[in-house]
Amino acid sequence: MQGTSRSELAAELERCARLCEDTAQLYVERHGDDVGTEVVSSLLLAAAALDTAVKAVEAGEGTTALLIASTLASDAVAAAERRGLDESLLRCVPMLRRVAALCERALDET
Amino acid sequence: MSRYLQIYLNDHLAGATLGVELAKRTLKENPDGELGEFLRWLGGRLAEDRRALLARIERPSLAKAGGAWLAEKLGRLKPNGHLTTYSPLSRLVELEGLKTGIEAKRSLWLSLGDAELVARSDEQLERLEPHRLAAARETFG
Image (cartoon, rainbow over all chains, first blue to last red; front, side):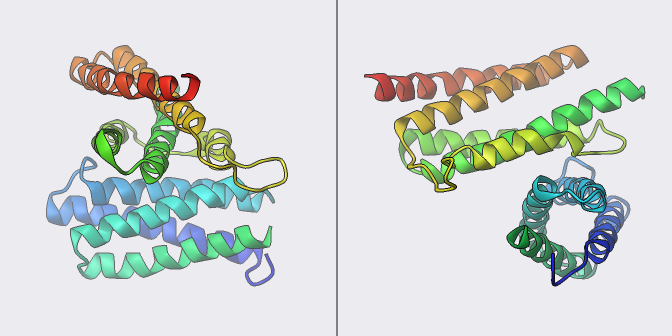
């Protein structure tokens, strides 16, 4: 991981995980969605995968966790695009794209 | 909710996530005909069932997904790191992987006493079996 240090990567993944949770919460409160809707479940799954990746990266591991995080972050982007991007998703989606790319880059470097 | 139940549900969440990915990969390799149609249907059902599971979890975690996920992603790599060619045997192994996953999910819903979701799993197994048998016939003659 030359371009991004492990601590920077972990911090970025952590920020994205919290943003995913906040966005999912917003959809529940503002749009009346529940966890059964695709966009909310995708955001919560991405958050769970990112949290797992944070722990793995901090422990000096992380290959599999980064693979899972990248896949589920990309799935969440696709779900958000299917739903239609509003203000909250417009903040979250670019960050998800960015962390998916960071995960891929980190995987390439391992 | 008990700690043990949370762990149990999160273990199944990891398995469900693996199942969704496996269905996607199998569909990518078999997009046409009745099998492709079935895999599109199954992928949708597996994603819906995962959402039903997620709704029961207070704090989702995918910590247990690692080993199985890696095995699935790397399952087609030879020891030299090159991809193996997709073959009838690959199809059979993937369909059996999906069957195993659905059976595990059925056990989960049985344990939780959700008859509707048990019935959904039964329908998935019933519709999968002819495709698995066809793949076995194609593989072994």
